[in-house]
Length: 354
Image (cartoon, rainbow, N blue to C red):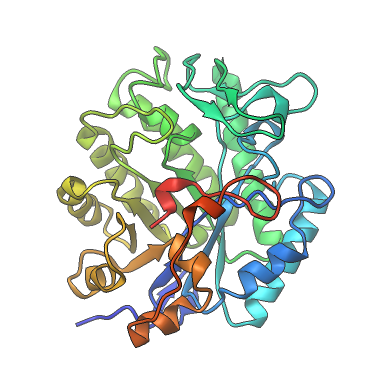
């Protein structure tokens, strides 16, 4: 029986265990040009005992930003600042992947320079509001990307992946979950297109597939991963019957030889689909589940449901989480109310808060 505390070879690196620090938005990029600060270096280095750290979402381009004070990987100063983070994690014996997250329609013009507005698969506004330094703002209707702009966005993501490797990251996870741009192309409620990027299942998965291929071509498939959340309604996404889209996507990803597939299981009734996608993908699977007890989540590895499990808020409250999991506790209790508000307090992408 495999346990969470056994090593695993991933992307050419030997992970010390199968416990993953999930990506969590923190809004701490207070350095010049939205760069990580020394507090970010300390934050990740403190958690280097994770088998794998996946960073907060990092925008691959200026227009990809969705929240205040989130970092990018599209400038020389950002590459240099992230190098300090990766050096610190490696010095502490850890492995770290950059999560590239284009927020798409989730954002607001007050976050963007030069008159830019959020973009999306289609001109469909999300219901709800976004926290900004000017207070809560209603989401705006995004500008629909043209076909040429879709290809340019894929190129931006591939360039950011190249920058991530230059910055010392061990790999890249594309954020295809939780209602951000890749998910917006997958979901029928946010993709109303009638061109090659929308309509049929094959067309709706095209953006995800082409983005993954572009990154794999740039940095190698063994350093490329993607996160998906089938049926997750977060950020006003509607996917009442996600099976066809995600099984088709898993089948297209299977031959690429990716580092892993990171699945968010929003509700227990999605377990059957998770198991189907695990079988179709064929490679390493990381699973993020609702907030069951830590022992229940570790059992997912023992039962063969996943190869690794990811933890969010519990890693914030317990930087030495793998040691505490092995000892069966005790655990500091996360306080979700303290995760919001910007500044060094930061906030969390709630689907990772498990």
